[in-house]
Amino acid sequence: QVQLVESGGGLVQAGGSLKLSCVASTSIAGMRRMGWHRQIPGKQRELVAGLRWGDSTDYADSVKGRFTISRDNAKNTVTLQMNNLRPEDTAVYYCNIVPWGGSGYWGQGTQVTVSS
Image 1 (cartoon, rainbow, N blue to C red):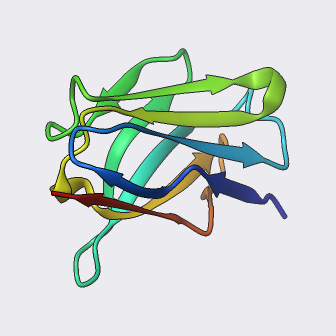
Image 2: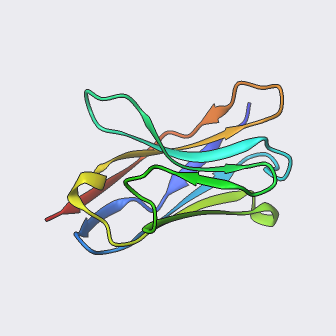
Image 3: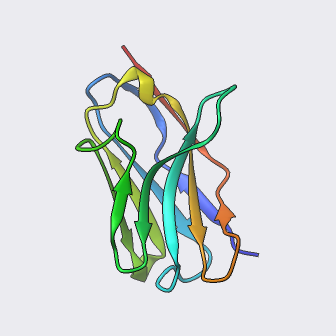
């Protein structure tokens, strides 16, 4: 069973930065897709940033130019650098990795709270 452990969440003022990390218990080098999603209570989980095989990326419109997703294959880590945070970025953030031919794995989530 693949495990994903997220860290880096916390409380920050608007305009501040946080860096989320997701460490996988398996190699991420051959994964089809990796991403960060977020969820607010009562709303659907939404994709924030995705990283595909070949290193193409995609971002939600609301975070373009502020968030950056990257990976370190040697450390089996996917990171999300979040700059210029806004109160509306407050959510639980989840890491997700999807292997070829598999349904994917989720982390337990890390809370990000942005105060105004």
